[in-house]
Image (cartoon, rainbow, N blue to C red; front, side):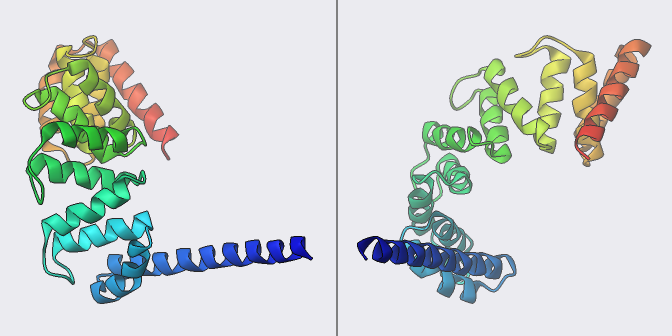
Length: 229
């Protein structure tokens, strides 16, 4: 009898968890569709109960001022609750709040720390931002090798900005061995996504390349596109 009761309790717990998940997703859908009042009503109880996705959306609503009054401090509070549970979108946004000093004192090292946590989970925007911090070196110290690592991860996921910067590192030999073929590949990919800077860089790069390098670059671009489609 006790085993039977435990089984029933377990089944009810699973059903309640699925129902809660469905309600959270309904709230997320309402947010994405611009129905902010419905999103807030749906998600606020789950955010209070500790659901990280609901907490992240609450942070977004306070950051955007929809449907609640805009409040960066409150946005940071919700982002932090979600980020501490490992939710990468919240970690990325919290990093941005620290970087720009929105709702919290500006702190580049905290920004880098939160972006790194999101980047290590594969978040391409955080990878690009982290790479940019190491590339520029004004906030946490210049390290082109680290920049190339994070740009490379994001570029492979299709980040146009990361592809542009990675091409620059390969063309100049910063953080990686100079490689015009790799620069050609990443600038071609970024250019295809609409990067005018990458297009301009390509026009300057191609006259410096041999016919064999251009051919190799075209081949690698074609291989990449076959793999990603």
